[in-house]
Each structure stands twice: as C-alpha cells, then as structure tokens.
Image 1 (cartoon, rainbow, N blue to C red):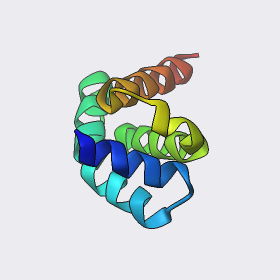
Image 2 (image 1 turned 180 degrees about the horizontal axis):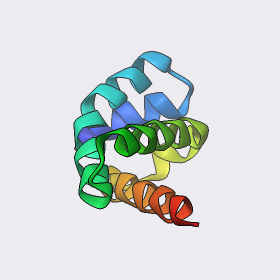
Image 3 (image 1 turned 90 degrees about the vertical axis):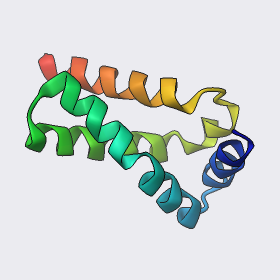
Image 4 (image 1 turned 90 degrees about the horizontal axis):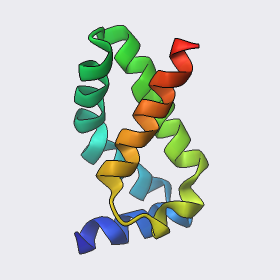
Length: 85
C-alpha cells in the first residue's frame, strides 16, 4: 500500500513516468470493471481512456486519496452514468 501511495504522490506532481506505471498497473482492473458495467469491449476502451484522462486531469488530488481502487470505481461509474444521458 505504501508503494501505491508513493506512486500516487509522484503522479500528483506531474511525473509522467509514474503515471505510465500507474496506467500499466491499473489498466486491466479498470477495463474489467468497465466491461462488467457495459459488456461491450469497444465501449470499455472509451471508458478506460476517459477514466485515465480524468485521473490525469485531477492528479493534484491523488496524494489525498486513501483508497485508489474505490476512487477508480467511482470514476468509472460516473463516466458510465454520463454516457447514459
């Protein structure tokens, strides 16, 4: 857990290499959850792209997140809800 916290802190200070490591670490997990929600691979790819874009956009707040898994799930659900409108 400490390693993840350090990774998030690095991402929060604009470290693109850390973001790439974060992306590689969480891509499969985000994709699987998006697929569970949507059931369509192409739509999942779009959601995953949106999720990681959103994470990068809000990277300054990452150092304050206690549970990154929950945060990512919430971003996916928010993106999914927006797509229903």
